[in-house]
Figure 1 (cartoon, helix red, strand yellow):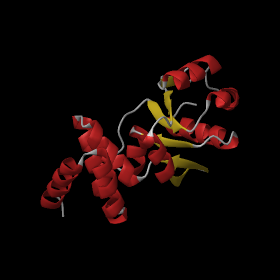
Figure 2 (cartoon, helix red, strand yellow):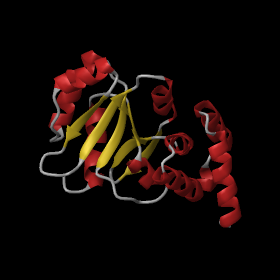
Figure 3 (tube, helix red, strand yellow):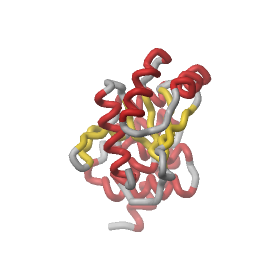
Figure 4 (cartoon, helix red, strand yellow):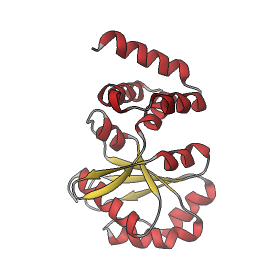
Length: 185
């Protein structure tokens, strides 16, 4: 794999084949909905239990990725992240389990989208914007705005407001919408 889109497709096929529910969040989702920006990682939320680790490892190794069952089990036990490396490249997967309500909601709201010849599961537009506002760095705010602008006609505003309220970022959402409405036709 020499391109990020090839990695995303390979991972989606591997996870779907292993019947592991997942959602792609972060920079790859932003690129799909908003602006293309440089990223070397694919951020994933996986619906896993420790007993699922061997199947996950088998699926990802089958896609040419470097991961160990111990790393997965340790991360799930500690409710943390684990990294999957792509040999011979700078790419990686940054993975975490669905530990809490925010992660489960990302899985529930995910959207199916075609990339090349492969169907992938992406964070919903509304959830992505709300989470970017929650994380709140300058890049996150720019990401949220780019997705909002590019997807404006396809956003479920009620769902966006519900997600923003649930995450405590209604003020940030109002600021974003006011900024977009006054600066962009």
